[in-house]
Amino acid sequence: MRYGRTSIVNFLSQLAMSFSGFVATIVLTRTLGQEQYGTYVVVLSVLSWVAIAGKLGLPQAVRKRISEADGRNYVVAGALAQFSLYAIVAVCLWIARPYLNDFMGLEATWVLILMLAVRLGLGFVRTVLDGQHLVHVSSILSPVEWTSRSIVQVALVLSGFGIAGAFAGYVVGAIVAAVIGSYFVSIPDELPTRREFYRLKSYAQFSWLGSIKGRTFLSMDTIILAVFVSNSLIAVYEVAWNLASLFAIFGASISRTLFPEMSKISSEDGTADEIAGLLRVSLAYSGLFIIPGLIGAALLGDLVLTIYGPGFDTGYYILLVLTFARLLYGYMGQFLSTINALDYPDLTFNVNAIFVVVNLTLNVVLTWQFGWYGAAAATTLSAGMGLVLGYYYANQVVNVTIPFLEVGKQCLSAGIMAAVVLLGRANTGDSLPVVILLVGVGASVYFTSLLALSQEFRTTVEDNLPIQFPTLVSK
Image (cartoon, rainbow, N blue to C red):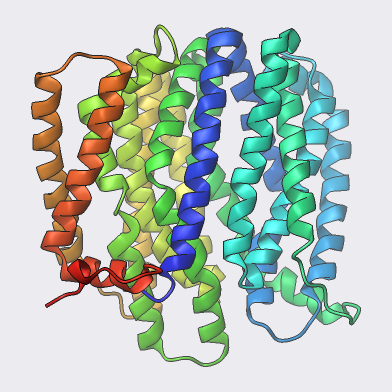
């Protein structure tokens, strides 16, 4: 795997980010309580949706055009466009503040506007770094942001500032990461021309729906749940979602790493076989962590959820359904990322449009009828449909090869892991130290089994280690 080290850097950075967020979430849920933490989650969900209006496909367009390395100044052109979009959205939010405050259950519109500014600023910096093939640098910004955020949030919440401390930590974390990331951004000397703005627009006019699709998958269920259930249940649902997302980190890291490489190859008239090879690699490793993660959630999820406090274990079945949804969505993402890298945003537009309509419809109907189980089911069904459509359109622009054998070996290794963990749990008590021990044992068994079963995985590990271990060399 040529870009394995960059993917590993991105993955470890995301893992560190998730760990700091995990610790902070435990403090927030136990200190704020389910009701207040649920309110915090609702505000973040609203922020995520208004951020889409502040982007309108611009980040995808900036990343794509910069990655083509044609020497034009898309950095400044993108920055000007981003500031203009933010100003328009901020004014609209202020006008609509009575309705927003009522929906969020908190007088927080001015906080929302501030959080939007730092979110868009950091997002733009990361997008530019990705486009400039500095994914390993932009990856570091995530743990920097989350660690800074978590430290401030924990300190302020424990000091008695309540939900205001949680908001303050969000803002501080984003500012710290944006300042650090800006240091590594390279800005061309030439001023942008009308051509740069036109080329950004030509891509963004199709890619904007991708942001809505992504946000629909990530938080449409939360928004709909806010209408039908209490904030306490939303808090449990969000914790289950965050745990499910933890397992999907590596697949997202691969997609993020390979996109600028595919984009550059396609812009230089690279061969379709080379891009098809990269797509196969992304599919082969997209489920590397989430497949055993799904099995692990089934075996230990009820114990892990109790860490967040009393009542959170009620989200056990939600956790399983959402983890499976993340698995499907991860494979879908590999197909759509490849299509976008090949400069066919109109095809992904079709997938995204169908996904958004189906997801919204299913969320409203199923949540209305079945509560939070309906929301989880809607998310999963939408991801499955998106996966089928993603494969269909990707196969139209590149020769798609599904690595069934490698995925099968990952499933078999996860099955071996499950047997060991199940035996271990049957002979131990239910406590946090036991959970940590079983997770460690399970991970060791899984990767050991996969190394034994898969020559391709052994070769990948060997090629991307900084030093060579003779035992990993394939015979």
